[in-house]
Image (cartoon, rainbow, N blue to C red; front, side, top):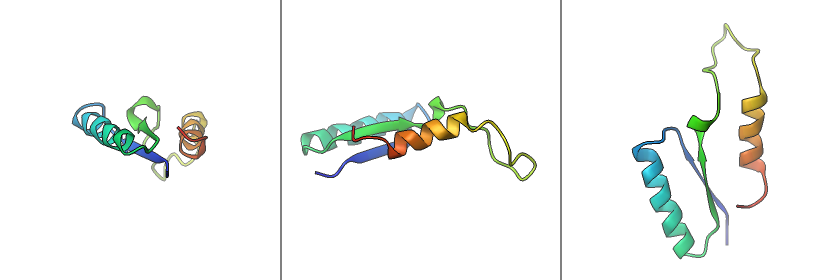
Length: 69
């Protein structure tokens, strides 16, 4: 089966919905992972601040590209 990465931007209703989607995926024998963007310290990008701390961004990229859940 294909892997499913569920991305949420808040930890409220969106996370609740993501958990429901994950449960449905699990019932269909699909491995899934929830990636909660609110757990990353990602500053908003503006043209004034193109250079910044990339550690959080690199961590997110690793979560997206990493091994199957």
